[in-house]
Image 1: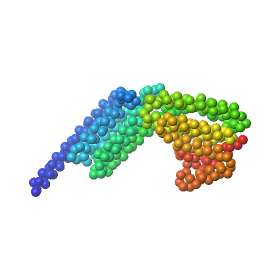
Image 2: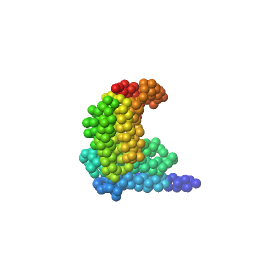
Image 3: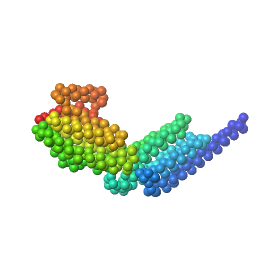
Image 4: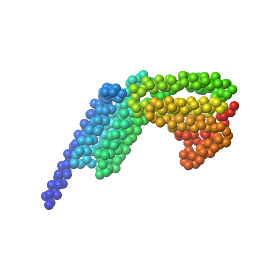
Length: 343
């Protein structure tokens, strides 16, 4: 019995030594493989994403998968995850950030910029998939605190890729905004149209169609084949958020009559519909504040406006208060809308 026990101990020690050696070897392989992948500038077959993303995450997946197939995955695989995170941070994340800085202007015709933006978006998706593989590979029996922390680090890594991709799409979205219409038409526009007559209303609709909706449709049509669906969704949100904020700020500086309030509400709705048609991304939150403002402006009476404000106050009292950074106006902000209606 003693001999059998001693043999088992020696076997476990041997297995542990093999697992530790494998872990060290996988760490070396991972660093070199990711380094080689990040040294290239080729695009993958579809021509949207830099091949370094596939190469880096494939190397990480392969190293971790091999480590989980040992007799002691808690020795071989779990301690490998921090090295895996470090390799991906120093490899594709750092490389893509550098390439973004050197890619040039955020423009729809800048292929270098679009490739890096697509690659950041793709890397975020890959990081979340890798997190799931790591979670399943470690299992409950190997969920040591260090392993759980490492899985959280993969979540954080995915968020860093996502944030960099979102920043890129916000920059690109800024170049797509209808600046001429905003500066030359919307800012000086008078939304008291009853005195101006039907011709002014028809002109405003035509100018909005020609100066906003048509350019946005052309820009997004050109970008649809150049961006991954996830990146296109980020771009739609970026444009929606920027336009919503711009319209809201401008509206609070204007005065509206009944016809002007209706026109403003129509413009907000058509913008929201136009962006919703570009991708599956819901833009309701992006236009939530300005849509609420348009709704308040179209109250048919003081009593209706008061009722809407009371509803807003009830929502705020339930802990759903709006305000800056929220998709809804605060009670105080909503209270500024009814006085904007005047002849």
